[in-house]
Image (cartoon, rainbow, N blue to C red; front, side, top):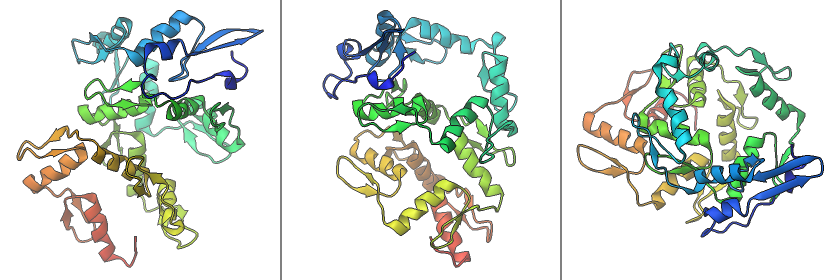
Length: 347
């Protein structure tokens, strides 16, 4: 165990050398205390090891090509043992399938835990705000928000975090490291969860299903936002104009209209955006890669969502229908603008 996380010393950010083998291994921190064993820490993702050889093995994940390819799904790995572990996920004789979305798990416990997502069961409740969680570990992390405790500190800018995982992800903003790579399009991510979500854009997988209307979503947060559409409750209210919202994040974005704050800035052209998602979409305009091509007219798009919207111009599909007058629209944005004509509300 390491008594003080601030003892980890990260190397300076050097764009030309930060992903090389020497920097990952030789520059990695070696922590030593009189009463604990020596710890070797990867400077890119902060994962810690007791043996130098373990660190060297781990460093391959950040620096080497993926030569070990699964002959079933073509997913590629740096280390052969990772491929062996992955292939077990294809072994149906020892897998457990979710009866709702058919996702498979190696262990029955994992499958049962996953099933709670579909059942809506959240047995672990916070005694402060009554928010519920499917797992006790998630509740324990949540409670830190109320206590104000932030035990994990960045030794570069001294910013503090409630969870070690958040600190690890934050450190990557200093090092520039993006250790998680998509094996299909080679896009890189700082976070493995972001990579998993991204891969679903290739596979089309939508494991999170609404138990009311059976509409499926890529992420659990998208499902949670959608579920508010089945209720008229809007518990979050703006104290300035009294407009109400179903989720807190919508209120937070709305407040920027009153403050005039534009917090998200493009590092290339310095254009500013109110929402981070708009900045991310804008950043793609600086990339020349357009992976998504229309089969009808060969027009190419940076984002898959843009291609899907474009295809509707060929098919005439209008999936977004007004629940007041039944008029149909190509995009959700057009529907939202139309619905304002039925009310006196302003955006």
